Length: 304
Ligand SMILES: [Zn+2]
Image (cartoon, rainbow, N blue to C red; front, top):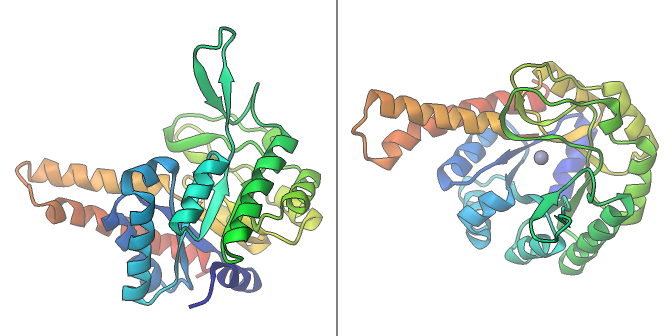
């Protein structure tokens, strides 16, 4: 089986994209992989956030992915999704993850130094150079372990969270700047870069999400030598996602809608059968909903 870099390169050549889907339980993971294979994907990336990884267990996630790769004879790659520190990324790499996304957060103390909160942005957020230093450290560590482990960095203000939100304000000032993208990739050596050109995390209900493809083209022109990742595809129109893939996105993150479908299907079962206690009978239908969505998205990512 080839490595992740190979499949991303193939995606770039064929103007398609690999899907990236998150999981926190083994049933959802299996559903994602089965649906991806059946829908004709060349490979799939599955991810755990720090929270999801804490729930599944890092080593357990690695073992589950390895088992599915062998059982289904299909290339599945495990990604540490938005890990917040060098230490967390190192833990994932040591556990056997195939790739990591370093999304550094700094701790801010209030005036009295008591309450510590964490921030990606605004006052106290890591500046450009601070981000470069942390990201480079992760890249160096990954390389020291294996040249097959890919590292993704992130530039631009990627707002929102993996939930249903009403409104998120986004302006071109939040977009990834082409010049910075070039400098960031050159200084850090990341394999993949998450960029912002109108995308946000999660779903917004009271506004339309719209990508600025022309802006993305400027980024790619400034720095063609990295794989580009679109985060926050939930809530975007399929045409927008397809256009971004045509323009050069090779990896699309899709998460919130899967969570919503899974959760709603479980609600439905318990509504209809309040006494159901057999896990596979109430989780099974939820996984089927996840599979339907993954199938539909893979078709978009493959340009079908
Ligand atoms: Zn993301």
